[in-house]
Image (tube, rainbow, N blue to C red; front, side):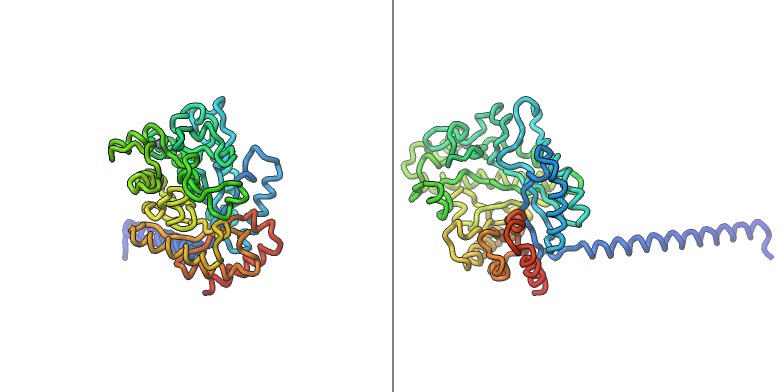
Length: 409
Ligand SMILES: [Zn+2]
């Protein structure tokens, strides 16, 4: 017979064991639920579908209908099978002016993200914050630091001339350490927001030394070679750096494209800036990606963007908007392959996802264009843009069918 004390101990033990097994059961159930829901949410990166989306709809500055529009776009995107949305939060016309933004924090971008995140959460769509990077138009910055902006081969700052008659063509010099610090602060304040999956760097290049060929006529330019008006950056810092490096003042070069070191200097300046921004985004555990020109060779030539050297990025989205290059549809495959092969050769840490322009991809040929990208080695596919999809008759339906097929392959 057990005495009362022993019985009490045993009874305590059995209560403890009962409670223990009960809580273990709850924990196990919890783990099971989490693993099921994780499995459910896990997207196959090989067939992941992305879309760019303008953030102006979410701007608090625009009309009050934006909530309904966000609901519409996110609901349609989910129904169509889009996994991730790249939301433009800082474009060519930011509201910032010198009066209210002495600290340079991009409050408008943060507002746009905060307004959009609930829709992304509601529909289980990954949300990336898309910013224009070296092309920075905020008036407070232009007023405070005009010396950070690029200068062309005629000695004129891009703040003083309207390149291609575009008000928004105002470009920071990638060689200026202060410009890099500024951009690091801008990506950090977005990357740290809970719920944002990543930061997407667009316009991370020089202004077009040559416009994509299909645009020359409509923009009224003759660009059979590089002309000094469109050739940047000849600011004091870049000229001094290059002179120290080579003994040459680049301003004295008769054909700057013929000088391999001068081309390389400019490619390297953008590459270093991009890789540094990628590391900054990674500090917050977020995905670092960029939108780049269509093919590596064209990018280096047209906009001094050597993007296959952007080795620290997680994803690179070449904008293979082929008709702007006067190219055939099959060039989607060629351009994709060139990018993938160079990224592999350069030991890039990330992967390539081809970007398609809805206006160049007819609704009844979406499958064909996706197949070109896939054959070229694209991992996933990205569409520009959700607004383009929305305004093109039958596009949501056709895209849904094509995505379903893409996933089955
Ligand atoms: Zn410069």
